[in-house]
Amino acid sequence: MDKFTTLTGVAAPMPIINIDTDMIIPKQYLKTIKRTGLGTALFSEMRYNEDGSEKADFVLNKPAYRDAKIVIAGDNFGCGSSREHAPWALLDFGIRCVISTSFADIFYNNCFKNGILPIVVTPEQLELLLDDADRGSNATLTVDLENQTISGPDGGTITFDIDPGRKHILLEGLDDIAMTLKRDESISGYEGKMAENRPWV
Image 1 (tube, one colour):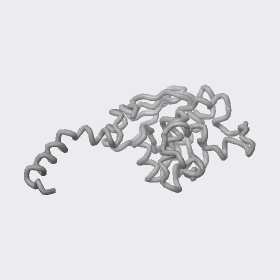
Image 2: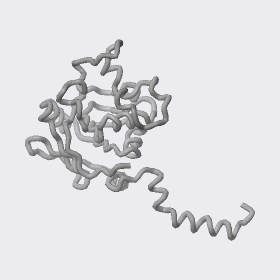
Image 3: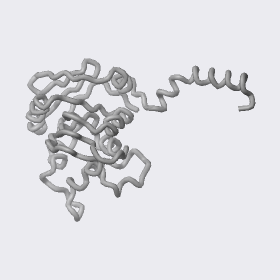
Image 4: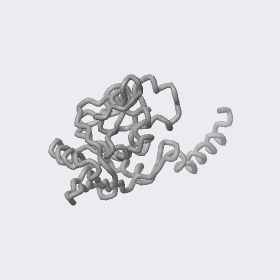
């Protein structure tokens, strides 16, 4: 998993509440277990017409936001089913950070397991960030995880809270497997003692 330290990129405004995981990645794309290739399907029902052509008014289809790395969204982002394909699709598109006033718990946890930083802000802070994001290609934000700050295009700064353990996971780029491997010596020692004391197991 790639480390998350500092991210500077265009922020796409999506002031919609209750964006659920089916909106993020519809069910017909859940057949794959690969984490790549899902970016084209991100928000597909909002992004594309029935004939597959792009909807010009959808934010990520607008030239200024095609390379967005940050999404500024309404309350309760990632609600609905627990599909891990949702953060996979965001990451494959290039989104490394989602900012909202609240997240569904399972989606929130899945973000950290996949190298995405979900940031919770106040409604007032969200309005300021949405105003920044409305500037199109000039809507560049800098997210500094180490210092827990979001800096806007005019130099204004917002601070955010994050669990220290989750912060460490992102800063070090540790997924569940990497976390386990860091304890390899202790695990091997325990297994050795078990084999010695209980050879029948």
